[in-house]
Length: 326
Image (cartoon, rainbow, N blue to C red; front, side, top):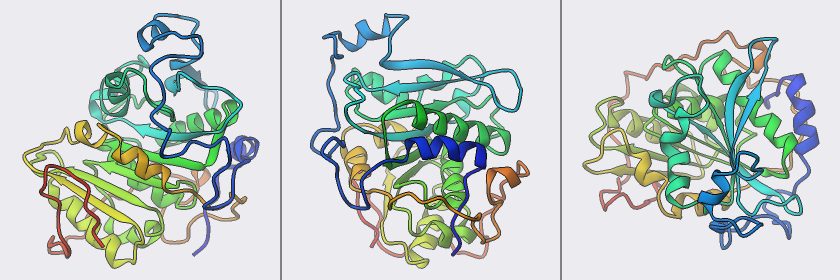
């Protein structure tokens, strides 16, 4: 399989940010599963609420703008841990919101999913989180996807980031985009967690190497749970080494409330690291759209109707607790 190429403009950012430990190694200053949850007070001894009340804050949710392609600057946000310091490298999550977060205000996407979970934790979250905003519920395709990745690479260059601990998660249409981005860039993310999303089963082989924890509500009326079951089956059929599936009984499309609550997902994320980063030479050669420079703004998200939707293995029906599929 050929590796994926980041667009040349963005690779400059990645090279700046790409100093990190080798595959499987943990540097002394890297976040560890034992200490990721962070503190509820900032470096100056301020609480989460006090930090967020400061318009000149450098930690907490930080509003950002980014101009791409000479267009009007777009808004996004970055969660910077309250105890952030450049003396260590921090794991990074790219979070892609669902339809309810769409807009251009740079704020609506903070009201659901991971940003909302961080608020509920009173800021106890020691990941840097990149939170782009999609203006339309049509989805994260094309220019919207390019904007999200440009925001990500900008943050990687600006902050002290652990490039071997780069993770991807999204909800609803952001869950769709989680699968799509992982398909196009299967060597960039250490692990992914699509929540309530649809993946392309025909491209499961491409992301089989990427550890994935898939979450779905059993009674989701927007994206039927059968879609998640088919994707897990396809990934396992493609020889995926690390796939977990949590099906939440009596839960609809808001499965993210349980997915992002507690410590399990974040500890699991930190159990996975990327290999040492290398400059890739070509896009994935599997029929996908390839690199950003070749994207036509379309993502074929059709599900293979020939699959019968039956799932090998067991589903977790025990209150949403994690259960390996292998």
